[in-house]
Image 1 (cartoon, each protein chain N blue to C red):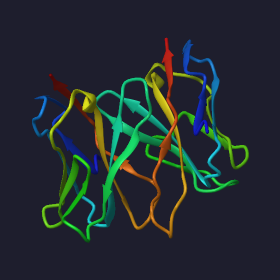
Image 2: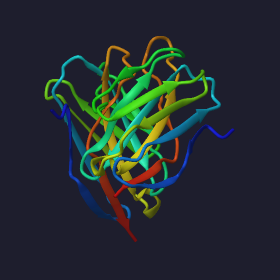
Image 3: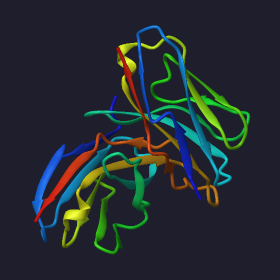
Image 4: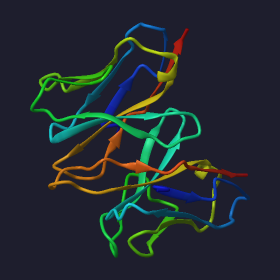
Length: 115
Length: 112
């Protein structure tokens, strides 16, 4: 099993350009997430989707949009990239067990640099 | 506002030593406290987790100690090995909410 797959792994953008980060999971999980990781800041939630057809803002949603295309796929779009969005982006998925928070399974990350 | 404070930022321990990483939280509604381990170039992976109805949980060489009154929890690694060198994140969530709040991470280095 591949688990959580993210593409691309690396991307360099110029300020103002747009791009979409793709994420797919093959574990039949209902919930999917996008986090960004910055030095000294830990992991911060950008958006999440508790189930197919629903999305909700996390801690740092400004400048991003998401689409839950189907149960497997959850994409993150930067409409007009800014240098402050230089980061490593992680997609994750989870499944609740008995109403309790489930384990998050992370992809290997997408390293984005905005010049 | 940082809801989960993690320390230290980095830690160097000799092989066989017991590194301890501490986290403190503010929200008393938090009821799920996992630790994630991340190796360079990889995504974080769940290491061990605890709920506030117990004060300690062990899984192999890894132990979580939990102090509900102090709103603190910590990770201990017994007989540490160079292969334990990684970044460790504590996290917390409330009421079965799947939105985890992560600490800022601790970069652990175990030297031979």
